[in-house]
Length: 266
Image (tube, rainbow, N blue to C red; front, top):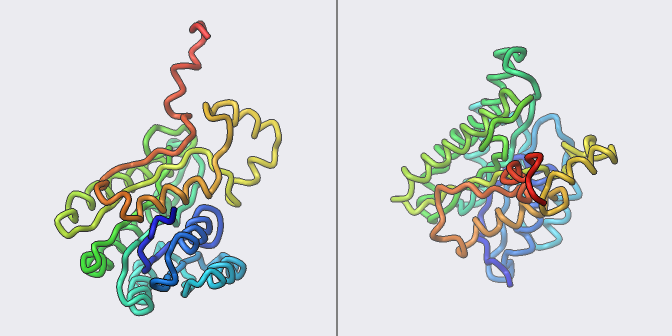
């Protein structure tokens, strides 16, 4: 059963992994015979062109626009918003997926790293949402931000990333409250351990993969497609009464700690 996802979409951080999976699923789920899918993809200026992804989307009937640039810059975000509205003629769905990790401990990280994490993981969502508000209001659109399980709990060794992803959740919850009267829904997805091109080096080590998998009650590491399915649901009319929420997709990991306490009956 198709979700009948709306047709004018912006996805940031769309070159690979979760972003790429979201784009592919949207192209499959949209009823392109009824209305063509207009999808704008942004990628970092340091990333190579995702030619295969673009080819796949266009083969499924989508009309695509690729924008390269440093999304931590205000002028780039403003340009993305302007190009998106010019290309699409409006907007139904804004998916804020661009982000990144800089591991470190609070006693060690520099203020530059701290600022960079917030500039990458929080600030673009704020600027783009602000610039796209009027267009989203016209079409009763939705915003979906990709946070992390690290945004819901303290994460040792992720001194800047964890607070930044937590701030992203708070931003989205505030947007949801403020813009509900405009018919705009805003939600977050918080992935757990997901095997993506960004994390693949970790999962190249068999013992590490086995140890991580053993922590997950569902018994497997997540995939980009797992997250894309949740995003597709939140973008569809099937979730029309959901806003201001965080969907944690971690295979049960975050709730499993009490079961790991030694001495409990098995």
